[in-house]
Length: 169
Image (cartoon, rainbow, N blue to C red):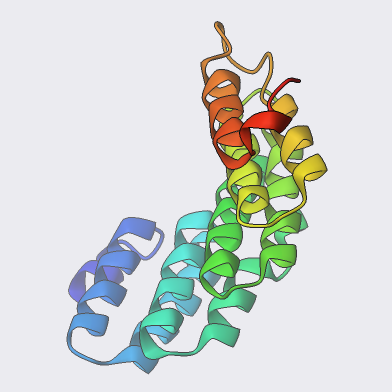
């Protein structure tokens, strides 16, 4: 379109074009637009997330995953964090808790002081039955915020799962 020709290095214009193409049911053209945007503006988290969403909307979960997971390490760390979070969220929806855990752990390594990755890891653990893992995920939240609010809430979630006689610790 004219906007893309005038501003070929404007990521937002490319994403708007792709979203318009998706609304028109032109998924292949939308993917092509995002791939062209990546060539023009570089490998950016927002472009990968858009490509992944387009693939998911089209029912191509393999492409949705690879759009996020391919060569994350070559991206700037801020973009990596966004992509690892989105990848973990996608893998949860795809029922791949092991993959989601790995993505969220990578996210946590980038954003060490941020409780969000630790909370995501806790939610994955809470979906399982490994009580020792749940305790480790709860404990990982301690000290990540000023008054340990997230840790306290996580501890309550953990206790709610346990039979009353096991809640002594």
